[in-house]
Image (cartoon, rainbow, N blue to C red; front, side, top):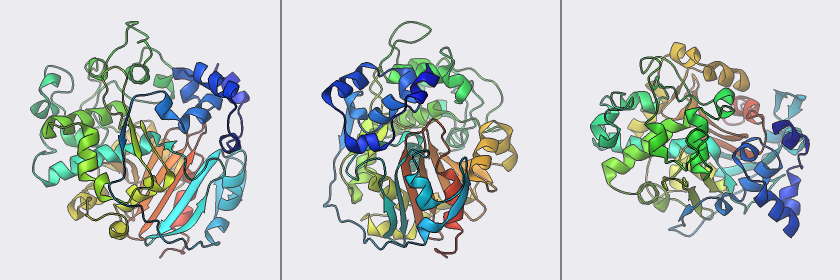
Length: 417
C-alpha cells in the first residue's frame, strides 16, 4: 500500500495548481491512517487542510500583523550541502521536484533574508508535525520558572489519574528529555505495527478504531497501557506520547485548556500571520501538541524567534526566559544517553554534524548552543540564539530528512556571524 501511494505521487506544485471537486472528494475518501502518514498524495492534500479532518481549536491573532522587513540575500541560496541527489545549492534543492520542499524561510536579526514557496501559497496553513513539540515545552519551562513545577518531582505527584500506572514515578525532567524508559518509542517499526502504542495513539487521534480493541479509544486510555522497559533517564527514545503527557501536565497544573493557556501565555503576545490551528484528538479532544498543529510558515518562524535576541520584533513579552534558554542549551543529558537509542545516531547522520544531545523537546543541541526540531514528513525549525538566526521549512516527503542537511551549512556559512 505504501509503495503504491508513493509511486503515484503528485509534485508539490499540485497544491499551487489546486484540486478539482472530484479530486477533492477522492482525497477525502482516501484519508486513512496509513495514507496520511506515508508522505504521498493524500498527505500532500491533508498537510495544508488538516482542519478538514480533525476538530480544531483556533487561536486567532490578538494583535495586528506587522510583517518583518524583507531584505533578501542571494548568497544564502548558493550555500551547498550533500543530499540524496548529490551536492546541491539551497536554491537548486528547494526547487527540485525530488526534494518535495513546499516552503523555506530564513530570518536573521529580525529580518527575512530568504523566502520561497515552491509547493504552497504563503497564505496556506501547513501541518507542523513534530516541530510543534517545543510549544508544549515552552509552557512547562514557564511553569518551572514560576515554581509551579519542579522537574525533579514525578509525574504522579502532579497528575493524580496517572498514579498506579507506569508513568507515576517518572521524573518530569525525564519526560522533557524523552527518556521515559517506557515501551512507547516511536519509529518506523512501531508506526507500521498496528498493535504498538504509538500506532494506537495516532489511530485514536484521527478517529479510527483501535487496532486491538476495535473501539474508538482515548489518548489517556492508550497512554496508561504503557509498561516499563528500562529505568528512566538512561536512553533517548523518541515518543509523541511523552509530549502528550506534558500537555496533560500543563492542563492539570493550570486547570485550563492547553490551547487557552498557550494563547494567554505565548501567542496573544505575538505578531501572528493568520490563525494558529490546534487540532484535537477525536477520542478525548486533547490538543495534539506532539504534532497536530497548523499555521502559515511565518508563524513557525516567529515561534522560533522567541528563543533569539529578536524576540521583541515579534512579541510584546519575553516568553522564553533567559533561565529557560540556559536550561535548554546548557543543562543537557549525556551524549551517551542520546546515542543509546535508535534516533540519536539517525538524527546525527541526517544533520551531518556532531550533536551533543536532545533536550527539553528539542531533537538536537549542538556544541555552539544551536537547536533543531524535526517534524515528520520533512518539517524543520532551526534556532541559533547567538547568531540571532531562525530557519524553518515545510515539506511533504516520506523521507523525513529533506531539509536537515542544510541547517548547519547555513548556520556556519559565515553569513550570520
